[in-house]
Length: 218
Image 1 (cartoon, rainbow, N blue to C red):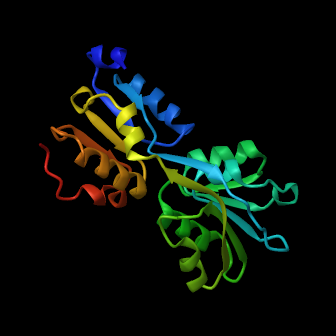
Image 2 (cartoon, rainbow, N blue to C red; image 1 turned 120 degrees about the horizontal axis):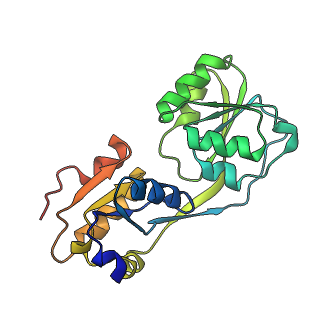
């Protein structure tokens, strides 16, 4: 921690989960920042009961879904839709041959599926136990046979552990937040800083920024 405190470069707290936080940290370093990688969420696989039969389409909203699901080689030729390019690369690396990225958020992903997959087909969404949106519900209402299959979950890191891992608040200048749930945890952490937090908070989406709406910098 002393090396970070001594640096003259702006310091950013990267709250993203492992191992992708290292990718963000490397990019921030290239941009002239010093990255403090302290995840606020930790993913882990969960036991999954797959429905019988093979769907028409697979959907991933996170690279963790690709990482933690049980790969079935019979499904490698299925159309696979991902929320973003990084998740698409993970799916390609896993062996899927027909991967299409929405290059955006869950709404963009839903639009892409509805644009390219006929109504009535079966769509499996391999996701976390606590998805941020209602992709499956929206697809069902649009006429698809959609089903969410939980393949992983994310556990919040206890706030006490985060305090122990972080430098004093005055030693970092900004915070990167990559999900609404992470935003709620970060808000809880900074609310506990004795002297407040006067830096900047950068959020991946408006939903992730909601916990900080009305937050005053002290």
